[in-house]
Image (cartoon, rainbow, N blue to C red):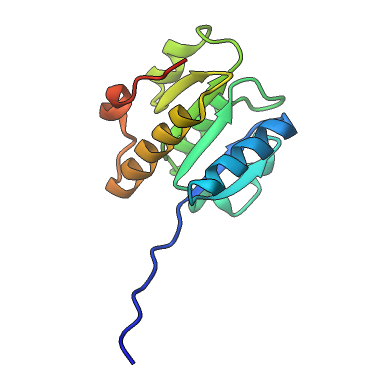
Length: 145
C-alpha cells in the first residue's frame, strides 16, 4: 500500500454576532468554502470557549451587546491571541478609521457580498499562516458593495 497523503487541517473561522440568522448564514457560506466554523452570540461566550487560541480568523459584529467587535479584537491582541479580524457593521463609516488603526484586517458594511467576505477570509487565513495580521493586504480586495 502506498503512503496516504495527509490532508491539511481546515482553518477555523470564528463568527461572533448576536443575530442568529447572520451567524447561521455566515457559517453555511464558510462551510461551503471548506472552512471549519464556530459561532457565538457574544464576545464573552467566545472568550470562554477553547477557540481563542486556535482560531485562524475572526468575523465579529461591531455592535453586539456587551463587549463589541472592536473591543473583542483589542482584547485578543493585548491578551496574546492576535489574529486577523474582519469587523462587520450595519453602520458603515462610524468607527471605520478607529477599527483599521487598531489593526483590524477590514471593516465591512452589511449586507456583505459573499464573494467579498470569502476573499477577506482567504486573506486572513494566508496572513495567519504567515504569522502576520495582514495589514499590508487590506487593499488587495476591492469590495463590490
